[in-house]
Length: 279
Image (cartoon, rainbow, N blue to C red; front, side, top):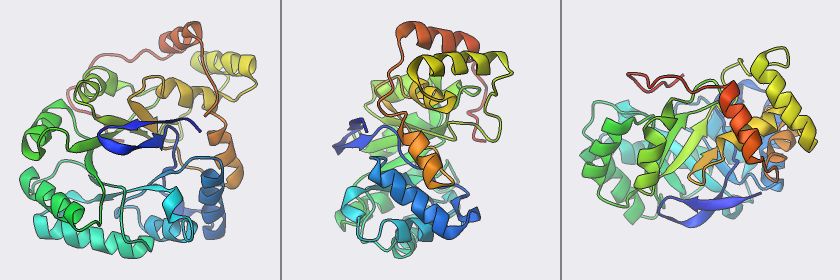
């Protein structure tokens, strides 16, 4: 699996990782097996959150005995993101994950607690060795500018945002801003929410044609398109070991400039929205 620099983090990270939103809805042994299969295939970036029900406990089971192989990320809810609340939330996540540290800890979306307090909590956790880096999620440019001011230069590791073929809002301003400031972009829900374009749609046909040229699948083509810029990573969820293997097979795929242009034309990004989409 290709690995890339991840913002200011002193470690390269797998460009295609594993998301866990709703993974606790799946048959638990199958979900654990899917995560472990993903690890076997190099998808060592695992993302979870305290909001995701029992997902952290599923991840904890999956990474038992393999913690050092994993770039582990979790997130604090904005309602918990006071200084003391951030520290307490992280400690609860660590217990569910059966680990003593997170590689990165994120504020799930902007909330009412001052960013200075949240980031002070992050820094306390970092000083204690309980997190190695921290970042944000669902932050638009004004939020990012406020976070940069509150946290200081070179502190924000990543911004995790909604990004799939039919939702390309981040390309207008968020992605360029992050690149200009050395912040990694992590794309969640890269296949959308049950709306991945099928082969009977014009865009779906383009994906199928390109996939056929590479002996790949349409979803693998989509993952490589979304990660075409060196700043951007993605974390698709897999419901089975077979699905995890399919996601991982996007790693070695390389699209030509002509293919990238065809996909770009088939899925136009549209106008910049007033608010950054989250769902």
